[in-house]
Length: 156
Image 1 (cartoon, helix red, strand yellow):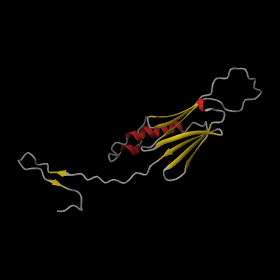
Image 2 (cartoon, helix red, strand yellow; image 1 turned 60 degrees about the horizontal axis):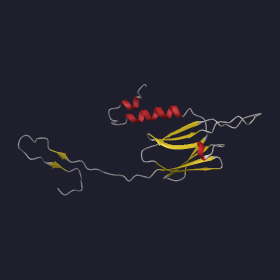
Image 3 (cartoon, helix red, strand yellow; image 1 turned 45 degrees about the vertical axis):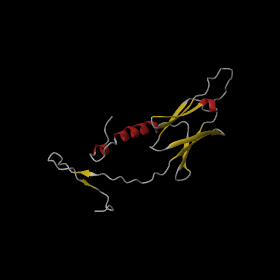
């Protein structure tokens, strides 16, 4: 796999996993079946809808694997008792994957009228500020370490 130039920056520490995620997304985007919609219901709620006509609840499996939402469908094998003159309804097995960002939770799945609805929650994180104390590096000369507080509102 060739490394993307944007991830070569020394300022991007710990972002190598994004490269792997983007690689997975590019492979998954070539899938065309089953068709799906992704709807943003509000700031915190997403809804994925897949067209799975002909599949029952027992034919479908929804799971989370390694930060991916994975939907699989496999219909029971045809017993050969039916004689088709034309078979245009897709009944093939499928696997559709969606890479989930950190913090996204799957709330539930519902099958209704040939559509599989999967509800996702994306809570809005509260901004956090963490203060880092700086210690004096001259500890070997018998001086006790002096601490500098980065908080501008702290008393001097």
